[in-house]
Image 1 (cartoon, rainbow, N blue to C red):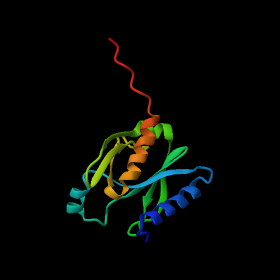
Image 2 (cartoon, helix red, strand yellow):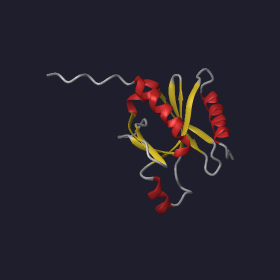
Image 3 (cartoon, rainbow, N blue to C red):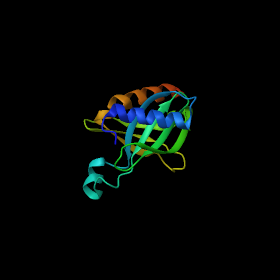
Amino acid sequence: MALLKSTTVDQVAEAVRRADPTDRLVVTLAALPGGSPWTHALICGQFDIERYFLTLTERAVMVHDIKFLRHRPGRLLHRIPRAEAARGFTDLHRRMLWSYFRFHLPGEAQATRLNVRRAWRPELDRLAAALTAEQPAAPAPVR
């Protein structure tokens, strides 16, 4: 079980290398999909929460599930090209304990809310900066 964030990041980096040995990791963060994590914890408890590792690489965003109770990367769920991931990253809200953003996962009808704990906020900021820098600027309104 990875208790240190640095150990967790190393384990995710190894999973990324196994998925694509030629790609280079840029940033990794852990996220919980769904509504407010506070509400979910009160209603459902902590044991059935689905969790993801999102990893930005030079060419893609990789989404791994997190193995239950071990906090290690599980199977690779999605490999989304960076340009597509940049278009799917929206609605970033930075909060004191839980920040969140919306991210369009392949096969989903609409964007999924992904919640990020405070401990992963620096990584969230780096992910947001990298993906929003790739989004084309909105065209100026025509008058």
